Length: 408
Image (cartoon, rainbow, N blue to C red; front, side, top):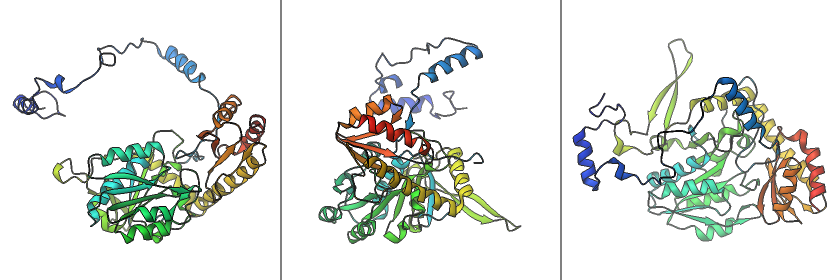
């Protein structure tokens, strides 16, 4: 126990007085500006109830939720998680799972680029169509570094490589691309993007997920220096917030990787063993040398992903990915047969999801579909995005029938 009675804030009264004096504050309270309407007044305002009353209240609250069939994607994908809950997917030497989610993995990749690339540039180039949440997190990450995030155009759902080539220069420190993209399209020119980044000694970061990576070309062979994404496509039900950030990179970046790394070895009986090998997050002992402030995600969700991947094995993982291509193609063909709808908007191969154009305003179509029991993304004035996996495929007949009714 420390002088001030807290084991978590080891500061003496003299320490606190010195720090407050340095910033010109009278006390700790002056360091915070909390509006009165949200300031904790010592009371939670929650009525005490017995177990039966609490269960009844929770049941009533949950029953108010809409019971919708979700055709939602755009970074959150619902695959069946087996009740039982070493695959090489990236071709890169080091994998760190997990960051908090794909967004923090992307932010960490940007700060990694500033440490390992010899260029003195400060430009980070990302697609103009990027999930808003990922872009906001990336902006927050680079705000503490001499980096500027800029966008490059997309063409028919994937990168406009010619436009990107005209934007990239010696000031570019990182180029980010995704496959599948946020519109569900497979990036067909990722190798050209990798070559372009290498021409300017910029880091090439590729965003994907473990299921898609099982059928796409190995990112390392495309020139990717880092692969980021969300591994929650395996082992974790859709949570719309909780993720498992995937971060893989070349072995040369080993001592710059954020978080913690586990190494594999063998015991004296020849059995494979694992041990915590490296923590580049050095706040514990040498804060001035820390390469990242990120902490490890909960081991429970990472373990569930590992169990799901092991349960599937390489063959069934590839089968699952193939189904993601076929289901999207088949649903797009059915939707394209509905009067007032054209699908897919992009003349590309798609993975899990695609964009459809509606003659009626998309918000009106989505509202009518919701009233019929189906949830879809609105991504444009006349565009909706549809995602299909094994968890909603049995409801697609009803969805197409509902779309036929509301699209005209």
